[in-house]
Each structure stands twice: as structure tokens, then as C-alpha cells.
Image (cartoon, rainbow over all chains, first blue to last red; front, side):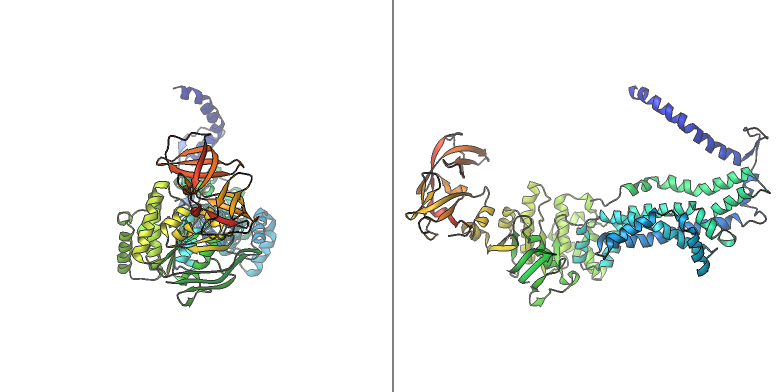
Amino acid sequence: MIGHLRTWPIVLALTIVSAPLVLMYVFLFVDTISNAPAGSFIPNEFTLEHWSFLWETRPGRPSIWRVTLNSFLFATSTAALVLVISSMAGYVLSRLNVPGRTYFLAGVMVLHAFPAITLIVAIFLVLQVVGLYNTLIGVILVKAAIDMPLGIWLMKGFYDTVPWEIEMAGIQDGASRFTVWRKLVLPQVKPGIFALGLFAFLLGWGEFILPQVLAPSGNAQVLSVYLAGLIADDNNFDMNMFKSVGLFYMMPVLILFFVFQNRLMNIYGGGSKG
Amino acid sequence: MRILLEHFSKSFGAVKVIEDMTLEIKDGEMLALLGPSGCGKSTTLFAICGIHRVTSGRILFGDRDVTNVPSQERNVGVVFQSYALYPHMTVADNIAFPLRIRKMPEAEVKRQVEEIAGLVHIEGLLGRRPAELSGGQQQRVALARALVRRPNVLLLDEPLANLDAKLRLEMRSEIRRIQLETGITAILVTHDQVEAMSMCDRIAIMNAGEIIQIATPQEMYRNPRTAFVAGFLGNPPIAFIEAEARDGSLAVKNADIRLPVPKNATVPPDGTPVIIGIRPESLGTEGDATIRGRVSFIETQGRENLYDITLENGSVLRSIQRVRDDIALDDVVEWKVRSDDIFLFAENGERL
């Protein structure tokens, strides 16, 4: 009982601080399924018209499902690219005696420090020349490249915690260096692989500026760009539909977070047990 | 299989760890590489299994020169200090790993895993993961994994260092039993002289990258080549006192003690400074020479007591004797030394 008495001021303070946030989210949800009279917050009728974008394609806009698929492709492809390359590069940088390793690592770090936006003009020109402008592939490559430094550093950190003896034992057991990596070391860094994959997916899902600039229209449009298009459209301005699309856009992220939050925490822990 | 290191040298950058070492391990023998940390014993081990490349010299397995053969093809079984089991695999998969790498048929893998599990007594644990095993069990699994592919030689790198005292005793005899049953050539790296003496056929004692002496444990204990060897073997350890040769006997420095020159040593010329080594079991109630000193410490060991006696020049000797009630701290005693059991060393540590 005493414990309860002591904690109630903290609970109260937290409630007051977080109330505005909770209220905002509640109203975001309520607004998507109701109409309110002008000038009032309180809804007076239930409706699903704001969600109509799910089954009706608006004139001049791509289908929401096409855009969602693009977003999904964009996020999974960048995540897959980042995973494959970082898990190999991280191992090499952690374990093999590569010439200039320290410089490479420092260089990678510097790349990570650059805001992507400062590179955008150059990237735009490069994509134009190569012919990947306004394609999903182009923007996937750019996004993966920008996420890579973080991934490499993260994976290197995970590999550093794997004991050398495991690899030595594998070599003595007759396995090649590649088999040792694939069969013995990779399973030890599974938490890192998982966390990095999830992070890369979420980063890709949430990315706006790169697709907006490099793949703004047509078949390559992703959800964030679609959403921005809604609010920029002065002719058919519909705030509640904007909210509905926003909620729709958020949903996969929320689900992923709820399901995998424990594994995500792993990114700060990690390492091998036993 | 006979293992031969010929003029083996290893340096890391400018640091020479081992210079011109020649060492032969006989077929079926268990040899201990014994020495303090940093003496190069692990480096030697890693050179044999191919993890370190040798700087110069040759390594032969039988008649085959393996100096430049990669680890994977040397077929060396290694048990690491940390066991290095694969944490994500079951015990059975751990043991089967080297066989599967060799693409052995699955039925044969299963048969061999069960056979080796029987040998090291872990039949009941095959389905578990390493994290669910005790230290001793993990050790057995590591042994099984190293032995299952019938290696040319078994290397044990401080295999008992991570075990508690009771398990260590048990695994000591277990490892020896398994080595004898399989008849495999084995090299044990350790800094613990008890392990080396109790488990091995021969000991190669190392210091600063050099092998000081190779002999059977008994021979090495009875007949150490240098003061370093004498100091390394024996627990409680030997005690050294400085002396000088005078009139065919040994006069302890700054003390009124004379000891005869032991039969096993040559009589040094008068005035030669020497070091006398006296093992704790050589000092006590029997002997032909007398040493006078004050009992400065008594350590109870149960069956025996260990007495430190401080001589008048400040040097400390140790004596291990059956527990006796007639000695108290600070008593002045005159104890006997069997002069043939003492060791005589030159100032540089060489046996005289």
C-alpha cells in the first residue's frame, strides 16, 4: 500500500504530460470515422466515407493499393539490401585483416554523418544520367546506400562480441572461412540481423524526401508521397481523408512495433549467450 | 601420430615469441607444454593447429610436412579453454559438425556421434544446448567434438582452467582415461604443474619462448635442470637460499649454517656463489645436516602442516611435516636436511 501511495504523484504527472498526445491520437482516430458540425470538435455522425480511398481511386491519383505495394516493395528491398551487405561488410571489418580498415570505418562513419538532403542534387543528376530517375529501383538503391553506414557499424559491433574461439573451432573442424561465417557466426548475431532488418524496414517505410524528389509520380509513388500529395491538393481538400490515409500509413509500423518491441530493444544489448 | 617441430620460430611483428624450437611428440604420447603466462606455449599450440603461420622452421605430422597446410586440412582436434561450443546447436549437432563438413552420410554421422558420446559419457545430453550444460559437461562435449573425426593429434589449451576445483580433479583423470583409450597423441598446454605432472607422459617446460627441459614428470621433479624448473614444479614450492662454496662444503650467506655438497653435484671451487634449493619435504626430522631457524608461519593443511622457518639471515625455508603439537609459532628449531635431496645451482640458475 505504501508503495502505491508513493507512486501516485508520478503516475499523475505522467498522465498530465501524456494526456495531450493520447487525446490527439484518439481524435485522429475518431475523426476518420465520423463527421462533426463546422466549428465543433464533437462528432455528430458515424461515417466510413473518409476511408473510401480504399475502394475508390480518386481521379488523377494512383490506386492506394498500388502505392501501398510500392511502399512495401521499397521498404523490404532497402531492408534486404542493407541486411545482406551490412552482415557481410560488418563481418569483414570486424574479423579480417583488410588493408586500411580503420580508414574505411572512419569513412563510413563520415558518410553516415552527412545529411542525405545535402547530396540530393547530385543523386538526382546521377539517377537522371543512369536512367533510374522516377523508378522504384533507383530510389531503393539510393535509400539502401544511405542506410548502409549505420548497418555496417551496427553489425560490426555485433560481430565484435562473438568469441574468436568459435571461429577457430570451426576452422579446426574443417570448415572454410565462408562456412564458418554462414553456419557458426551468423547465428550468433541473429538479434542484430533482426533488429537491423526491422529498423531498415521502418526507415524505408517512413522515408519521404528521397521518393518525393527521385520518384515523385506515376508507378513509383510511395505512400508518404501520396499522403503529401493529398495535403498539397487545394482543389479537393479533405482533412478527414488525409487523417484516414495517415492512420492507414501508420498501421503497419504500429503492428511491427507491438509485435517486435522486445527484439528491437536487442539492438542495444546483443551478443552471444553461453 | 608423431609430431615434430623443427627449428620452429614465431614472431609477431618485431616481437620474437619463439626462436628456434625443436620438439618431438611421440606417437600416442601425452605431452605437457608447461610454463608461466606469456612463455609462448599457446603460440606453439596455435602453430601446430595452423591458426598461426610459422615464421620459420617446419612442422611435421608423421612424415608429412604440414608447415604450409591450412588448418582445415591438418585434421587437428582442439579443445579450447572456453570450450568454444556452438551455442545455437544441440550437443549432437555440435559433435556432428566436423563430420557433416566432411559430407559423411547421415546414418554414419549418427552412429559415430553416439559412439563418441559413449566414450566421454554424455549419452543423455545429446539433445541439449551448450547453455544447459555444466562446465564439466561442456568440457566433455568439446572433447567429443575434437575426437569424433579421429584427429592426427589432440591439442588441449588450458582445458581445466574454467572448472571448479572438484570438477578439475575429475576431468583430469577423465581426459587422461580418454586419451589412453583412444591412444591419440595429445598436447596439453597448461600453467598448472599439478595438471602437467598428473596427466602427461612427458613435460616440456618452457620459459620466455624456450624449452628448458623435457622429461618425464618424475625425472623432472627429481632432477631439474635449472632453478626455474625446480621452482616451477612442486607444491608447496621449493625454497632457495644463497650460499658460497667454502672448503668443499656450502656456507649459507650471512648465517652460521654449513651444508655438505650433495652427491649429485660437482664440488664447486672455493668462493663460488651458489644457490641452494631445498624442497619442503626434504627439511624435517631426518637428515645429515642441520639448519637452525625460527618458525615464522604455520599453515594447516589437514593431514600435514607447512612450516615457514626464517633463518638468521632473513631467508625463508619451507618444511612440510605431519601435524605435530610440539611446535609453536616463534619457536627456534634445529631441523635436519638430507643433503642428497638438495639441489645446487649456479648463480645463473644452471644446475651444478
